[in-house]
Each structure stands twice: as structure tokens, then as C-alpha cells.
Amino acid sequence: AASRKEIKRVTLAQSDTRDGAVLVAPDGTRAYLGLRAADRVAVVDLNTLEVTHEIPMGDGAGPGCLYWIGASN
Image (cartoon, rainbow, N blue to C red; front, side):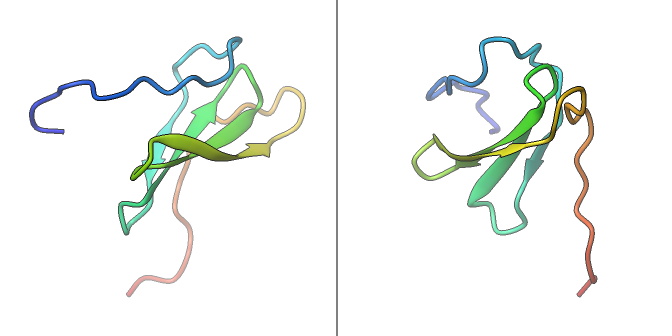
């Protein structure tokens, strides 16, 4: 991250506007990308840089913000 060097470009939804949220898991293994225009969240494995799962949000419910909710340590 410090070098800001692009190492791979991950293909997501063609219709997406690229302005959704990015949330990295606390353990650094996954990133959750909010695909606003595509109405879903893509889960990216940060070791392989591959999309491993997509979570549908329903029509018109594209996520612009993502938050961790849960018990604090």
C-alpha cells in the first residue's frame, strides 16, 4: 500500500460506478467491495486477488457504505 503500486486489476461488475465502499477484514485476508450500481458486495481474497463470492443486495439497494458491527475486544 505504501508504494501505491498496482499489482493486479480485479474485474468486477461492468455496470459499477467504482464509487462504493471498500472494507478490509480485520485479519487482512479479505476485502469487501460495495458495488453500488450492481446492487451487490464482492468479496475479494487478498492473497490471490480473486473474487471469491458476491453477496446480492436486491434491486436498488447497492451499498455505498459498509461497516463492521459486532462486539469489541
